Image (tube, rainbow, N blue to C red):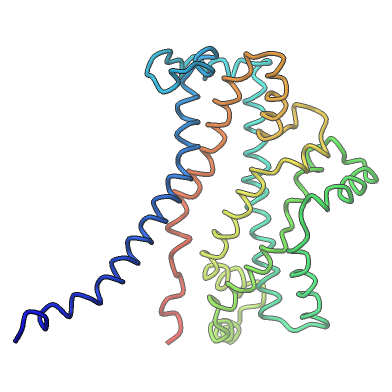
Length: 291
């Protein structure tokens, strides 16, 4: 057997190795693009006001992380702590209730028959394509008519209803809740509510966590709706509060370090939520439920 014959099997590996290298390069660039702003935020949060605009930004001198943290919670009478609490209340409570509402609506669309079901679901899908900024003015007019403008409820109530969450709820219900399991529960004497809360809702755990994470991210980063609805700074979420401080930084430069430190702390809840809930997100709770 000649040497050329022995070397033939190595040639098909070249396109495979080339494709793998391209994929790894794309992944590396994507990770770099994602992490560089976070790295800059971490470095900038540890600098004082003068070091932020100096040429030795990456040096380890002028380290004032602790002082920036103290200044952040002392600025304007500790207003940032209130904003942070508002955001946690809006986001965590709103995402939890919104996820429960969305998963229940999706379950109803999947498991029950009622008049004009598919037409109503078509409206839900159409609502997914409507930008939230378009709805801000109608929501403001409705809140103004009911006297809810500049109140907690003006921001909290609209975030409870998410058309995309309803769509996901129906998809998860189709994939995670077999009809046979519900029929078995009904044969055992369970009513519709009991079958939903005791059987279906447990199976919909991954879907519930997924919708919760989507809702949490959307509400935490929500900016335009609070800006339209609120004028009382005590009701601001973190996003709107930092925007107001950043607007004041051009006149009062002492706001720059606290805005950067506040931005760093603002991403912590989202990181913790994804880190703590990803195992529930990935798990298939109904594996083996139907023989």
